[in-house]
Length: 325
Ligand SMILES: [Zn+2]
Image 1 (cartoon, rainbow, N blue to C red):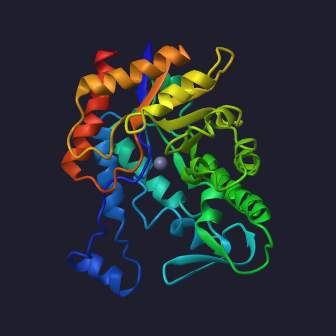
Image 2 (cartoon, protein in one colour):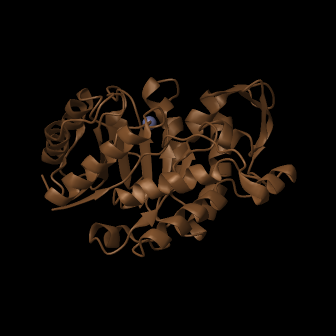
């Protein structure tokens, strides 16, 4: 059995103030990036915890604004995203610069990081990779107010999926090992699941690298449908949502060949989890999916945790990877 580790995203962060002559000069010129140091800090924490598939830490703004502020057709007003016109791709890549910084930082700390690292090599512990993360089409549209152009959410969801595909391709071409699509809104039942599925597949079916779909929350009404989405890896919360284990048991069949990313560390728990609890969550899911290659990660949303707690929780993943179940 092989265990690999990943992170869902949103690592604890704060923006940094310009410090020293060069940074202050950059700030005056409008070139200082207050998030650059946060990305470096997140990546350092991931590499220290020996995470196999890392990301840039998703430290920039919130998951809606980072895309809605760049993709054509949106406008942000008073902290709310509005759809003001036809949604078309952003004129420039949105997250490629952060991806490159994350990769460069990781590679300098551990030479095992490779561009476009194949999943098979990662499972064999011969390589590590950096994934790109997109906020999903359903979540972006359901977090925005449509003011113009679209009479229904459905077509807006498809158009933003096409815009996100351009971003996903940029990340793939720049060396991402996988693309993760975050769709927290799917579990709320706010959208017809078939619309969400079509939108995710507009992205996933055009990519050559693995696609991870992360859906958080209680999956009672959607887990069975999610198993039919054309993606390689489904990532769910199981630690803070133990009922998801029962739903998986109900819906899983041995003919399934998808990987399940096992969220096994409780990010809402204000202390470091008991290792036996984490182990038991992973074992319960493993017993259902009966796979030899296991992907484990924290439940989503580490952003509000202290650095110390986050590091402690990531370290648990490292220990379980090394010790096995
Ligand atoms: Zn989530």
